[in-house]
Length: 391
Image (cartoon, rainbow, N blue to C red; front, side, top):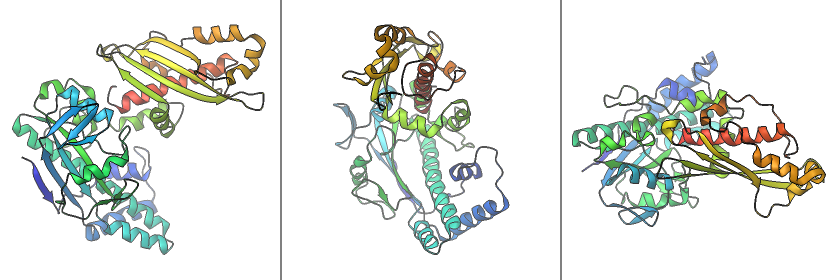
């Protein structure tokens, strides 16, 4: 059984990971002042930081009523539940890591002394330490699982997409007061110290089936490159690499994927995507309107081809009736919208190669504005599939 606490964990954050969190693009070489601040923050934390890591195996796991129940506590994350179900996970590991409160306190002192640069670099390094700790813990668990003939699923945490942070106190309670450092939840569900993380790793004995599931391969989500147990290239960073191919920034895509998009996976490997677009008319004082997009994608091994596409006003929407083209010839416009199915039959990845005019108008009166919206929908679907490990 896994049950350990480490008060002297490795904190040698990879330079590339630190620079990524600082906001630098891959391959960028920071200037002299930035390098000086980065080195100072790393050196300060090495002297003044008090990190720790904790892990405990929990064999009592069941999937019931759409929730993952761990030692009787129910957690409602569809992605967590699906990963446990598809990999036939039989147990879980509760993980907790913290960079400690020291860097947070020092950063606040620097802010009060009007030293925003030092504040930013130290805060960011503490965040990098937290990410590094959970990564190293995952690598350690992979080593343990290898010796048991088992496999570890990628970790998932409250606050990630689809898992409400309000369930964090319930997860912390599973530690039963055995953590090697102070950790508490606020009313919001956030943790204090803030540079901390709670996570769940699934354990499965069916390692062979696990590695057939792209979303379940922990190596794709693990940046610990020298790990001797690595079975697939690290792929998490490729979202940033893909960002240049999207017509909108990754933050907007992440927000739309979380708030506007719903993916439903069928047993045959097909996926139905539903997207809600909210806009305004260009006349009649900018009346709000809402359209629903439905896209059916074929299976992954065929590249998620676009099999079906539909676009229509959302139920109850009246704003579309105020569009100038609808007023001129409503039925013809709606028929045109229904018949337009850009990239039909082609893989979803082709959406990134689709060169279309940029038309930010909120209405649906002309073809350019409709193509623009279809492009945003398809890019958001592509982003969500890549984020979830399906691509």
